[in-house]
Length: 361
Ligand SMILES: *Cc1c(COP(=O)(O)O)cnc(C)c1O
Image (cartoon, rainbow, N blue to C red; front, side, top):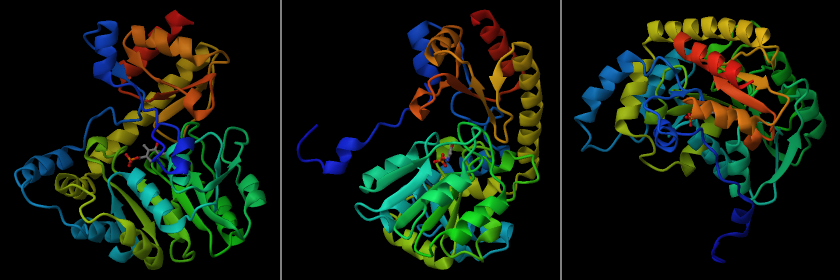
Protein backbone atom coordinates (compact mmCIF):
# COMPACT_ATOMS: atom_id res chain seq x y z
CA UNK A 1 0.00 0.00 0.00
CA UNK A 2 1.15 3.53 -0.71
CA UNK A 3 2.94 5.36 2.12
CA UNK A 4 0.53 8.21 1.47
CA UNK A 5 -2.40 6.50 3.24
CA UNK A 6 -3.28 7.56 6.78
CA UNK A 7 -1.67 5.27 9.41
CA UNK A 8 -4.97 3.87 10.66
CA UNK A 9 -5.81 2.48 7.19
CA UNK A 10 -3.08 -0.12 7.72
CA UNK A 11 -5.21 -1.86 10.36
CA UNK A 12 -8.36 -2.03 8.24
CA UNK A 13 -9.65 -5.44 7.23
CA UNK A 14 -11.63 -5.74 4.02
CA UNK A 15 -15.36 -6.40 4.25
CA UNK A 16 -16.04 -9.97 3.11
CA UNK A 17 -19.54 -10.12 1.60
CA UNK A 18 -21.59 -13.18 0.74
CA UNK A 19 -20.50 -14.75 -2.58
CA UNK A 20 -22.44 -13.40 -5.56
CA UNK A 21 -24.67 -15.78 -7.50
CA UNK A 22 -23.09 -14.88 -10.87
CA UNK A 23 -19.58 -15.64 -9.63
CA UNK A 24 -20.57 -19.04 -8.25
CA UNK A 25 -22.42 -19.97 -11.46
CA UNK A 26 -19.35 -19.18 -13.51
CA UNK A 27 -16.82 -20.75 -11.13
CA UNK A 28 -18.67 -24.06 -10.79
CA UNK A 29 -20.39 -24.17 -14.20
CA UNK A 30 -23.88 -24.12 -12.68
CA UNK A 31 -27.06 -22.94 -14.40
CA UNK A 32 -28.86 -22.04 -11.19
CA UNK A 33 -27.80 -21.30 -7.64
CA UNK A 34 -29.59 -20.64 -4.37
CA UNK A 35 -28.11 -17.82 -2.34
CA UNK A 36 -28.67 -18.06 1.40
CA UNK A 37 -25.61 -16.00 2.30
CA UNK A 38 -26.61 -12.35 2.74
CA UNK A 39 -29.94 -12.40 4.59
CA UNK A 40 -31.72 -10.98 1.57
CA UNK A 41 -35.50 -11.31 1.45
CA UNK A 42 -36.25 -14.53 -0.47
CA UNK A 43 -39.62 -13.09 -1.59
CA UNK A 44 -37.84 -10.30 -3.48
CA UNK A 45 -38.65 -6.60 -3.09
CA UNK A 46 -41.93 -5.26 -1.69
CA UNK A 47 -44.28 -5.09 -4.73
CA UNK A 48 -45.50 -1.63 -3.71
CA UNK A 49 -41.92 -0.41 -3.49
CA UNK A 50 -41.10 -1.92 -6.86
CA UNK A 51 -44.03 -0.17 -8.57
CA UNK A 52 -43.01 3.15 -7.04
CA UNK A 53 -39.37 2.59 -8.00
CA UNK A 54 -40.25 1.93 -11.65
CA UNK A 55 -42.11 5.25 -11.82
CA UNK A 56 -39.33 7.06 -10.00
CA UNK A 57 -36.69 5.84 -12.45
CA UNK A 58 -38.21 8.10 -15.12
CA UNK A 59 -37.15 11.07 -13.00
CA UNK A 60 -33.54 9.92 -12.87
CA UNK A 61 -32.25 13.17 -14.38
CA UNK A 62 -33.28 15.01 -11.21
CA UNK A 63 -31.24 15.17 -8.01
CA UNK A 64 -32.84 13.46 -5.02
CA UNK A 65 -34.31 15.32 -2.03
CA UNK A 66 -31.26 15.96 0.12
CA UNK A 67 -33.34 16.14 3.32
CA UNK A 68 -35.46 13.02 2.61
CA UNK A 69 -38.55 14.93 3.77
CA UNK A 70 -41.42 12.62 2.74
CA UNK A 71 -39.63 9.55 4.06
CA UNK A 72 -38.68 11.15 7.38
CA UNK A 73 -42.25 12.43 7.79
CA UNK A 74 -43.68 8.95 7.20
CA UNK A 75 -41.19 7.46 9.66
CA UNK A 76 -42.17 10.08 12.23
CA UNK A 77 -45.80 8.94 11.96
CA UNK A 78 -44.79 5.27 12.20
CA UNK A 79 -42.79 5.82 15.40
CA UNK A 80 -44.85 8.63 16.93
CA UNK A 81 -41.81 10.92 16.87
CA UNK A 82 -40.82 14.05 14.94
CA UNK A 83 -39.12 14.05 11.49
CA UNK A 84 -36.18 15.68 13.29
CA UNK A 85 -35.59 12.38 15.08
CA UNK A 86 -34.57 10.66 11.82
CA UNK A 87 -31.57 10.55 9.53
CA UNK A 88 -31.68 8.57 6.29
CA UNK A 89 -28.59 6.90 4.89
CA UNK A 90 -27.30 5.00 1.88
CA UNK A 91 -28.08 1.80 3.74
CA UNK A 92 -27.73 1.74 7.51
CA UNK A 93 -24.05 1.01 6.82
CA UNK A 94 -23.64 4.65 5.84
CA UNK A 95 -25.18 5.79 9.10
CA UNK A 96 -22.59 3.73 11.00
CA UNK A 97 -19.94 5.67 9.10
CA UNK A 98 -21.68 9.01 9.83
CA UNK A 99 -21.74 8.09 13.52
CA UNK A 100 -18.01 7.40 13.60
CA UNK A 101 -17.26 10.56 11.61
CA UNK A 102 -19.47 12.74 13.79
CA UNK A 103 -18.52 11.45 17.23
CA UNK A 104 -15.24 9.55 17.25
CA UNK A 105 -11.88 11.28 17.52
CA UNK A 106 -8.53 9.56 17.11
CA UNK A 107 -7.68 7.27 20.04
CA UNK A 108 -11.15 7.33 21.62
CA UNK A 109 -12.68 4.11 22.90
CA UNK A 110 -15.29 2.00 21.14
CA UNK A 111 -16.93 -1.04 22.78
CA UNK A 112 -18.45 -3.84 20.72
CA UNK A 113 -19.02 -7.60 20.73
CA UNK A 114 -16.22 -9.82 19.48
CA UNK A 115 -18.35 -11.83 17.05
CA UNK A 116 -20.66 -9.45 15.30
CA UNK A 117 -21.32 -7.46 12.13
CA UNK A 118 -17.95 -6.22 10.89
CA UNK A 119 -18.93 -2.72 9.76
CA UNK A 120 -18.84 -1.38 13.36
CA UNK A 121 -15.17 -2.31 13.61
CA UNK A 122 -14.49 -0.97 10.12
CA UNK A 123 -15.89 2.51 10.79
CA UNK A 124 -14.23 2.68 14.22
CA UNK A 125 -10.83 1.81 12.76
CA UNK A 126 -11.34 4.20 9.87
CA UNK A 127 -11.63 7.06 12.38
CA UNK A 128 -8.65 5.67 14.35
CA UNK A 129 -10.72 4.62 17.36
CA UNK A 130 -9.45 2.24 20.04
CA UNK A 131 -11.46 -0.98 20.07
CA UNK A 132 -12.50 -2.90 23.18
CA UNK A 133 -14.16 -6.26 22.45
CA UNK A 134 -16.63 -8.07 24.69
CA UNK A 135 -16.97 -11.83 24.23
CA UNK A 136 -20.42 -13.23 23.55
CA UNK A 137 -22.00 -15.02 26.49
CA UNK A 138 -24.02 -18.12 25.59
CA UNK A 139 -23.74 -16.88 21.97
CA UNK A 140 -25.53 -13.61 22.82
CA UNK A 141 -24.36 -10.03 23.45
CA UNK A 142 -23.15 -9.86 27.02
CA UNK A 143 -24.60 -6.60 28.31
CA UNK A 144 -23.05 -7.06 31.76
CA UNK A 145 -19.71 -7.48 29.98
CA UNK A 146 -20.36 -4.18 28.18
CA UNK A 147 -21.25 -2.49 31.47
CA UNK A 148 -18.00 -3.76 33.04
CA UNK A 149 -15.92 -2.23 30.24
CA UNK A 150 -17.80 1.03 29.89
CA UNK A 151 -16.08 4.04 31.49
CA UNK A 152 -16.25 7.84 31.21
CA UNK A 153 -13.79 7.72 28.29
CA UNK A 154 -15.94 5.38 26.20
CA UNK A 155 -17.12 7.35 23.19
CA UNK A 156 -19.13 4.77 21.27
CA UNK A 157 -20.90 1.50 21.97
CA UNK A 158 -22.21 -0.74 19.17
CA UNK A 159 -24.88 -3.33 19.94
CA UNK A 160 -26.42 -5.59 17.32
CA UNK A 161 -29.90 -6.69 18.38
CA UNK A 162 -30.84 -9.31 17.18
CA UNK A 163 -27.16 -10.18 16.81
CA UNK A 164 -25.73 -11.02 13.41
CA UNK A 165 -24.59 -13.86 13.06
CA UNK A 166 -26.09 -15.66 16.09
CA UNK A 167 -29.72 -14.44 15.81
CA UNK A 168 -29.92 -13.95 19.57
CA UNK A 169 -31.56 -10.98 21.29
CA UNK A 170 -31.02 -9.09 24.49
CA UNK A 171 -34.08 -7.81 26.33
CA UNK A 172 -34.88 -4.11 26.11
CA UNK A 173 -34.61 -3.86 29.91
CA UNK A 174 -30.94 -4.88 29.67
CA UNK A 175 -30.28 -2.23 27.05
CA UNK A 176 -31.92 0.35 29.27
CA UNK A 177 -29.69 -0.82 32.11
CA UNK A 178 -26.64 -0.19 29.90
CA UNK A 179 -27.97 3.26 28.98
CA UNK A 180 -28.58 4.17 32.60
CA UNK A 181 -24.97 3.23 33.48
CA UNK A 182 -23.35 4.90 30.45
CA UNK A 183 -22.04 8.46 30.64
CA UNK A 184 -24.11 11.10 28.80
CA UNK A 185 -20.97 11.55 26.67
CA UNK A 186 -21.11 7.97 25.36
CA UNK A 187 -23.09 7.38 22.18
CA UNK A 188 -24.92 4.05 22.31
CA UNK A 189 -25.84 2.55 18.93
CA UNK A 190 -28.41 -0.26 18.76
CA UNK A 191 -28.56 -1.86 15.31
CA UNK A 192 -31.98 -3.43 14.76
CA UNK A 193 -31.56 -4.48 11.12
CA UNK A 194 -33.45 -7.71 11.93
CA UNK A 195 -35.83 -6.34 14.56
CA UNK A 196 -38.90 -6.88 12.38
CA UNK A 197 -38.39 -10.65 12.47
CA UNK A 198 -38.43 -10.95 16.27
CA UNK A 199 -41.08 -13.20 17.73
CA UNK A 200 -40.16 -13.13 21.40
CA UNK A 201 -41.93 -10.58 23.55
CA UNK A 202 -38.68 -9.59 25.35
CA UNK A 203 -37.85 -7.65 22.20
CA UNK A 204 -39.23 -4.15 21.96
CA UNK A 205 -37.47 -1.70 19.69
CA UNK A 206 -34.99 0.46 21.58
CA UNK A 207 -36.57 3.31 19.61
CA UNK A 208 -39.14 3.44 22.43
CA UNK A 209 -36.31 4.83 24.62
CA UNK A 210 -35.42 7.73 22.32
CA UNK A 211 -37.28 10.38 24.35
CA UNK A 212 -35.51 9.27 27.51
CA UNK A 213 -31.86 8.98 26.39
CA UNK A 214 -30.33 11.74 24.26
CA UNK A 215 -27.24 9.62 23.59
CA UNK A 216 -29.04 6.64 21.98
CA UNK A 217 -29.20 5.91 18.23
CA UNK A 218 -31.29 3.05 16.84
CA UNK A 219 -30.53 1.83 13.31
CA UNK A 220 -33.05 0.28 10.94
CA UNK A 221 -32.92 -0.72 7.29
CA UNK A 222 -35.07 -1.31 4.22
CA UNK A 223 -32.62 -3.99 3.05
CA UNK A 224 -34.07 -6.98 4.89
CA UNK A 225 -37.78 -7.25 5.62
CA UNK A 226 -38.74 -4.82 2.81
CA UNK A 227 -36.40 -6.56 0.35
CA UNK A 228 -34.69 -3.39 -0.93
CA UNK A 229 -31.01 -4.21 -0.31
CA UNK A 230 -29.98 -3.07 -3.81
CA UNK A 231 -31.54 0.38 -3.39
CA UNK A 232 -29.48 1.15 -0.26
CA UNK A 233 -31.81 2.85 2.21
CA UNK A 234 -31.46 2.71 5.98
CA UNK A 235 -32.21 5.14 8.79
CA UNK A 236 -31.27 6.15 12.28
CA UNK A 237 -33.64 7.23 15.06
CA UNK A 238 -32.24 9.48 17.81
CA UNK A 239 -32.66 12.71 19.73
CA UNK A 240 -32.74 15.87 17.60
CA UNK A 241 -29.34 16.90 18.94
CA UNK A 242 -27.67 13.69 17.78
CA UNK A 243 -29.41 13.76 14.40
CA UNK A 244 -28.13 17.33 13.89
CA UNK A 245 -24.55 16.07 14.29
CA UNK A 246 -25.10 13.29 11.75
CA UNK A 247 -26.57 15.77 9.26
CA UNK A 248 -23.43 17.88 9.57
CA UNK A 249 -21.23 15.09 8.17
CA UNK A 250 -23.73 13.64 5.69
CA UNK A 251 -23.08 14.29 1.98
CA UNK A 252 -25.89 16.32 0.36
CA UNK A 253 -27.35 13.69 -1.97
CA UNK A 254 -26.45 10.56 -0.01
CA UNK A 255 -29.58 8.54 -0.82
CA UNK A 256 -30.67 8.04 -4.41
CA UNK A 257 -34.07 9.27 -5.56
CA UNK A 258 -35.46 5.85 -6.55
CA UNK A 259 -34.45 4.40 -3.19
CA UNK A 260 -36.17 7.16 -1.21
CA UNK A 261 -39.39 6.78 -3.19
CA UNK A 262 -39.35 2.98 -3.01
CA UNK A 263 -38.69 3.03 0.75
CA UNK A 264 -41.62 5.39 1.30
CA UNK A 265 -43.92 3.05 -0.62
CA UNK A 266 -42.54 0.01 1.23
CA UNK A 267 -43.63 1.49 4.56
CA UNK A 268 -47.22 1.09 3.36
CA UNK A 269 -46.74 -2.53 2.33
CA UNK A 270 -47.98 -4.21 5.51
CA UNK A 271 -49.12 -7.20 3.51
CA UNK A 272 -45.62 -7.89 2.21
CA UNK A 273 -44.11 -7.54 5.69
CA UNK A 274 -46.66 -10.02 6.99
CA UNK A 275 -45.91 -12.46 4.18
CA UNK A 276 -42.17 -12.16 4.79
CA UNK A 277 -42.57 -12.85 8.51
CA UNK A 278 -44.81 -15.84 7.78
CA UNK A 279 -42.35 -17.32 5.28
CA UNK A 280 -39.54 -16.81 7.76
CA UNK A 281 -41.44 -18.35 10.62
CA UNK A 282 -42.42 -21.46 8.62
CA UNK A 283 -38.91 -21.83 7.21
CA UNK A 284 -37.44 -21.53 10.65
CA UNK A 285 -39.61 -24.35 12.01
CA UNK A 286 -38.75 -26.59 9.06
CA UNK A 287 -35.03 -25.96 9.46
CA UNK A 288 -35.12 -26.54 13.23
CA UNK A 289 -36.77 -29.89 12.64
CA UNK A 290 -34.39 -31.01 9.89
CA UNK A 291 -31.23 -29.74 11.59
CA UNK A 292 -32.26 -31.59 14.76
CA UNK A 293 -32.72 -34.78 12.75
CA UNK A 294 -29.18 -34.34 11.44
CA UNK A 295 -27.97 -34.03 15.03
CA UNK A 296 -26.55 -30.58 14.36
CA UNK A 297 -26.12 -27.92 16.95
CA UNK A 298 -27.85 -24.63 16.05
CA UNK A 299 -29.26 -21.59 17.77
CA UNK A 300 -32.91 -20.61 17.89
CA UNK A 301 -33.11 -17.41 15.88
CA UNK A 302 -34.95 -14.12 16.22
CA UNK A 303 -33.83 -13.07 12.75
CA UNK A 304 -34.02 -14.33 9.14
CA UNK A 305 -30.97 -16.59 9.39
CA UNK A 306 -29.82 -19.56 11.44
CA UNK A 307 -26.45 -20.02 13.11
CA UNK A 308 -25.22 -23.60 12.88
CA UNK A 309 -22.19 -24.83 14.81
CA UNK A 310 -20.71 -27.59 12.64
CA UNK A 311 -18.03 -28.39 15.21
CA UNK A 312 -15.59 -28.79 12.33
CA UNK A 313 -14.00 -26.42 9.83
CA UNK A 314 -16.86 -24.72 8.02
CA UNK A 315 -14.81 -23.91 4.95
CA UNK A 316 -15.02 -27.42 3.49
CA UNK A 317 -18.80 -27.60 3.97
CA UNK A 318 -19.13 -24.12 2.45
CA UNK A 319 -17.22 -25.16 -0.68
CA UNK A 320 -19.09 -28.45 -1.05
CA UNK A 321 -22.44 -26.69 -0.75
CA UNK A 322 -21.30 -24.22 -3.37
CA UNK A 323 -20.40 -27.05 -5.76
CA UNK A 324 -24.02 -28.12 -5.37
CA UNK A 325 -25.24 -24.61 -6.12
CA UNK A 326 -25.97 -23.42 -2.60
CA UNK A 327 -24.25 -20.38 -1.16
CA UNK A 328 -24.21 -19.96 2.60
CA UNK A 329 -21.95 -17.90 4.84
CA UNK A 330 -18.98 -19.50 6.58
CA UNK A 331 -18.28 -17.44 9.68
CA UNK A 332 -14.48 -17.32 9.72
CA UNK A 333 -14.64 -13.59 8.96
CA UNK A 334 -16.79 -13.21 12.12
CA UNK A 335 -14.12 -15.05 14.13
CA UNK A 336 -16.17 -18.29 14.22
CA UNK A 337 -14.41 -20.77 11.90
CA UNK A 338 -16.51 -23.80 12.92
CA UNK A 339 -19.88 -22.18 12.24
CA UNK A 340 -22.06 -21.18 9.31
CA UNK A 341 -24.93 -18.72 8.92
CA UNK A 342 -27.77 -19.70 6.63
CA UNK A 343 -30.48 -17.29 5.48
CA UNK A 344 -33.98 -18.70 5.80
CA UNK A 345 -35.21 -19.03 2.23
CA UNK A 346 -38.39 -20.08 0.47
CA UNK A 347 -39.57 -23.63 1.28
CA UNK A 348 -37.90 -25.20 -1.80
CA UNK A 349 -34.63 -23.40 -1.07
CA UNK A 350 -34.59 -24.58 2.54
CA UNK A 351 -35.30 -28.10 1.31
CA UNK A 352 -32.47 -28.03 -1.23
CA UNK A 353 -30.10 -26.74 1.44
CA UNK A 354 -31.00 -29.56 3.83
CA UNK A 355 -30.75 -32.17 1.09
CA UNK A 356 -27.27 -31.03 0.10
CA UNK A 357 -26.10 -30.65 3.68
CA UNK A 358 -27.22 -34.19 4.43
CA UNK A 359 -25.23 -35.52 1.44
CA UNK A 360 -22.12 -33.65 2.52
CA UNK A 361 -22.21 -34.66 6.17
C1 LIG B 1 -27.81 -6.37 6.78
C2 LIG B 1 -27.40 -5.62 7.97
C3 LIG B 1 -27.53 -4.23 8.01
C4 LIG B 1 -28.15 -3.47 6.89
O1 LIG B 1 -27.25 -2.85 6.11
P1 LIG B 1 -27.73 -1.86 4.97
O2 LIG B 1 -26.53 -1.01 4.80
O3 LIG B 1 -28.91 -1.10 5.49
O4 LIG B 1 -28.06 -2.70 3.79
C5 LIG B 1 -27.19 -3.55 9.15
N1 LIG B 1 -26.73 -4.23 10.23
C6 LIG B 1 -26.60 -5.54 10.23
C7 LIG B 1 -26.15 -6.24 11.44
C8 LIG B 1 -26.91 -6.28 9.09
O5 LIG B 1 -26.74 -7.61 9.09
